[in-house]
Length: 228
Image 1 (cartoon, rainbow, N blue to C red):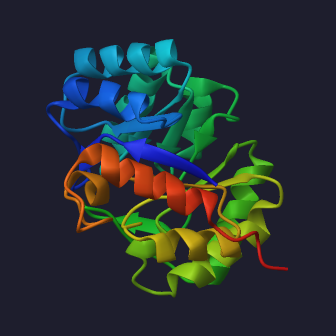
Image 2 (image 1 turned 90 degrees about the vertical axis):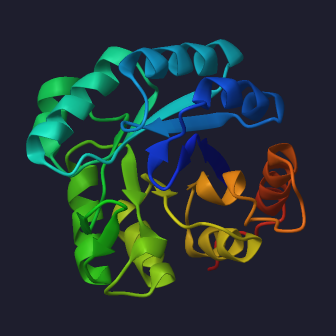
């Protein structure tokens, strides 16, 4: 499973992201992302260039909460040239802006608020994942552990069923090796962590960001295969 380090705390890109990104890349992370709130477009441009120069994959997660703001965020993602765009639910706008949706990973279910919560049962998530794949998306960005209407792992299994071969990324509140292992067994391809690394809650007895990252990468390596 891939670990996507998000340069974020509490659903906002950290103000000192430019100071942190090199530490993250030097620690061996090959997937790095940020959100469309918290820093300027100029900072996001610099982050994108640094991630690309390292050979890592760049991600922008859209957390805007109004239709107009989502459209602006998608347009920003195109200008930035990030490798993958996560979040949002406006497929028509994404197609207008990107054309090819293979690098777009929208939210299934009903995301609400900020920090975002996820409404919707497993059946809805499965149906929407199937529809997103038929639209040509690369996969989805599932807020499994932000769910309010269903068990998180049930949503992961439902998404996996609906996606077929599409890529399943799980975002939000992944804060322990146990959760990483549960996601792997249920069929997730990747997950994001930001706050749990910055605040030290992933490995509470360790103090440095580098140590948090090392333990997260270790949890990836020890994750079980997809359950039959």
